[in-house]
Image 1 (cartoon, rainbow, N blue to C red):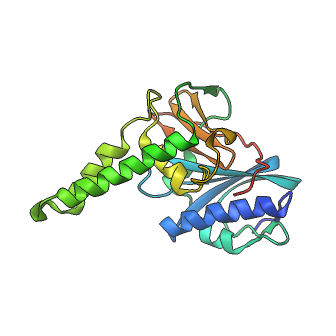
Image 2: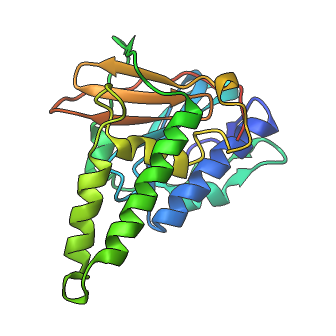
Length: 228
């Protein structure tokens, strides 16, 4: 077990805890890869079914160097929001995705991404379409395989002209990376970045990265000062 991590403030700890709670809700056995570089921590996770990498970053009070894969549930249990501290649990064998991360640098902005409200609307429309098509299936075709086929068709569509799969926007919405419906969308910057075969949807609340072709690399760590 490594030394405890001390966040810059309680809000940073709360943001990481909220992210971990959402991952565990999707997969009780979820693992996360932690990477600390100086005064910043990045928490990588892969929620099942979305086929994306989700990243939550946080500022640390003290500089740290860390690269370890741990249980998301055990890490969540070790986060003390009131004191802004996290006990890092014992390392686990990392799943295959934990060894394939986006690159540190070389990112450039991609034009054409809708704002947060537009992304949220696109996700809502896709969810409605899936439910409608599911309800219209005859009884003999109401199978898991057929529902998966419909889901793959819908969520593989791209957002506007960007090439970003709609499932990435769905993941960002489900993980709390998009602002709530009552928020003013233009006040929350949502950016699409590209580096080699990777696309990265970034908001002040976290990032979702998807690989559009074969590629290897590592993602840099940038602290966020915004809480969930």
